[in-house]
Amino acid sequence: MAESAEYKSGLKKEKVLKALLEDPILSDVPKNPTLEDVETLIGLELGSAMRISVLKLDATSFHVILMNTATVKDLKLAIKNKINYMEQSSMGHRHISWRSVWANYCLSFDNNKLLNDDDTLQNFGVRNNSQVHFVPYVMTKESRRHSKRRKHRFFHGLSKLF
Image (tube, rainbow, N blue to C red; front, side, top):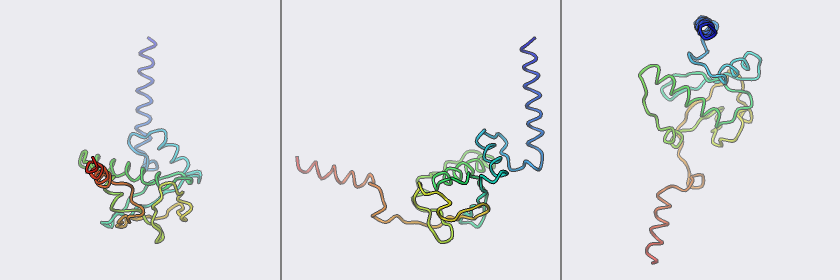
C-alpha cells in the first residue's frame, strides 16, 4: 500500500510540475530543468543573476542566464548548452565542434574581446540585459597553445639526432 501511495504522490507531483511549466509566466524555464537552472532563474528574479543576449553571426540572438559572478568560461558553457538544447529540440542531435568554434570566433562586449576564460563578466561591464556577440578571431602565435603540429616537429627533430 505504501508503494501505491508513493506512486500516486509521484504522479501528482509530475502533473503539478507539468502544469507549472506550461504557465506563460514560466516560459523561460527549460522543459526538463535542473536544480541549477531553477536556482539561476530564482537568482534572476532576486537580482543576483543576469540575462545576457547573445547575437550570432546570422543576426539572430538568444538569451542565457548566468549568476552575476559568472566568468567568460561560464558564459561559453551556457552558450554551448543553450545551442545544443536548441539544436536537439529542433532537428535532433547535430555535432558542433566547440573547440573549432572557440578557435575561430570569440565573444565580444562593447568592443572588448572576451578572451580570458577566468575573467569575470562584470570586469568588462556586462550587466543584466547586456548583449554580447560573436566576432571572428584568429589566434596570434603568442596566445596559441602548443599545437600537435609543433609537438610533431619537435619529436621529428629528435629522431634525426639518433
